[in-house]
Image (tube, rainbow, N blue to C red):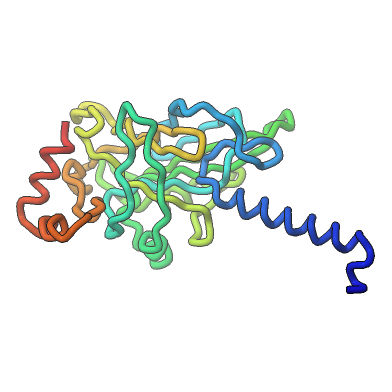
Length: 256
């Protein structure tokens, strides 16, 4: 009891507790959430923030933001064995929140990220005027002239690390969330354009419109999402997922 006879240690303990509590709260923010200068969640309108598309050329783009962001990564997947990962939001909605995935983080650990289509990394940088602001590094998997994949999106990230402040390859300890990308046709792209432009990602207070490549010659047919992308409920749906007609039913519903 004598240890607490002085108010100074008590105040210090309260300060440390508050600091830890604040840090924990910030860690709970989704990647890309807008922040105030003190690190608290900012009030930001939920209008789509159009992130540059990583088309066949270029496969790497940068977008500067006029607000600070929660650092982390949003990953668009071509497919996944994790059934809890939602399909990226379609128009006219505000998007879908990404989710964490031990399965996809396990793929990262083992270097088996062939289903990772696009990665958006949110960082904070300081410009030449001393102003700190958010930035998005957006990477897509490298392709050849026929739009066939020649590597993974991690190869594109590695090739662009030099000279880009704060850019890094994702680690399993980072704040990473996942979404399944919408296939060509689901977002109004008939094949004439380069990107499926309605991959909407909703953070805690900002909606991002993440552009993605349509499938190339070496990519799977994304117009028919994998059954693993569905959140199955009930024994009847689980049984239907194994039926041969399931994929045909999904395609007729989702392809516009």
